[in-house]
Image 1 (cartoon, helix red, strand yellow):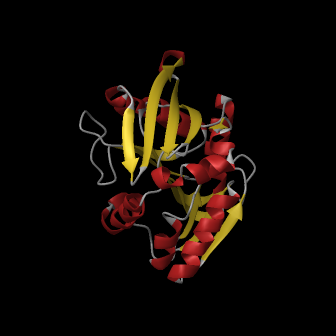
Image 2: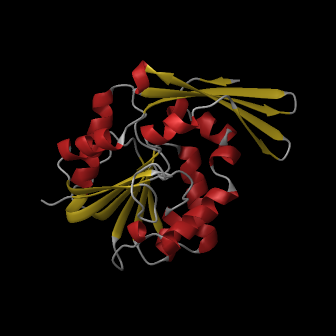
Length: 249
């Protein structure tokens, strides 16, 4: 079976779920919320987790006392998120919506977009629109935290195919640079016994300079770039590209 719709294909998220959202990813979110200075928000802050998936961050945020809204376009992922919230007793409001259409003006103190969930629209202007929507969703003084794999980091890591095993399942991922490093394509082949699933994702990749300029265009101020959730510089030792920006007005 081949999934050509990428992030818009609900079957993709279901078939590749174990590789996209391993137990390690959930435990990583808990650890980051316990330790990261970039994820320490005022008590009771209203937090929007945009592209929330199966509740990796929404549930632990709610358990820490934040007022959390999770938005995702995938019904399958939201079903998992609601189940996780119910199992843990967390109160989370979930909304099924496309990020291009979702709007709640000035309703949040924090907007999160985690694990490279940004840049997937084919028209680059739509990706800019998403940033404008994030800005609009924040109350004045609110903070955006946007986490991606920066172009500089990907340049170190685009290597021959990666092979990952989960139990008896095998995933082979091949990355291809497109359009003079404007975009990246990942082709995935998942082998489960006699069944083979294939999927392809294409997304825009951004350098720190490019992402900062986009945030400025969207109206953000006090823009900072970090190389990890521990607040390290974005330099040759960076692990992620984490942008933090404030809506001043």
